[in-house]
Length: 122
Image 1 (cartoon, rainbow, N blue to C red):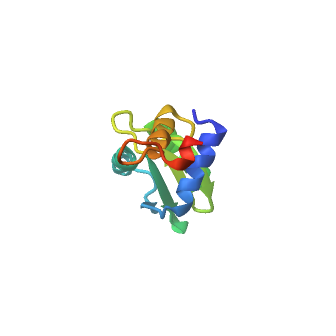
Image 2 (image 1 turned 120 degrees about the vertical axis):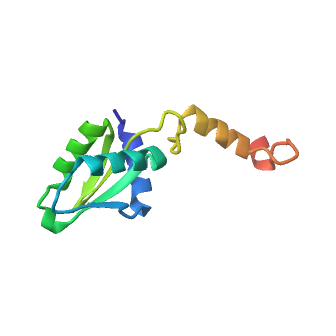
Image 3 (image 1 turned 90 degrees about the horizontal axis):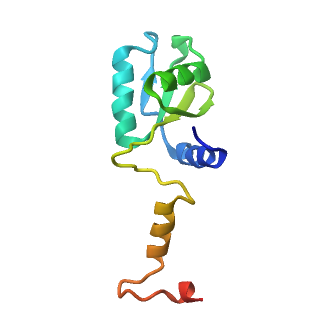
């Protein structure tokens, strides 16, 4: 279950994404779910577009897909929705405030010679 700040962070990432796949008049099929699961494993966050002739509601479809794939619903706008599933083996998205993000931020403050930068020394 995502917390509010995590969902907001994922929405900010999703703003720049273009839909990777589409749902057509056939609707959500088993092969579509397999394909989407592979995409989630590779990217962790996927934006999907529903064609108008599919006759599906974005939020209902997203919730059904999330339930089938054990993914998290991020947002639905119009005929597009975004879902997220963390890759436990090789996570790509690190949330702000997470220990890995803090460690990365601290390592960014050190120069190549191993000395802290002037700003981080203050």
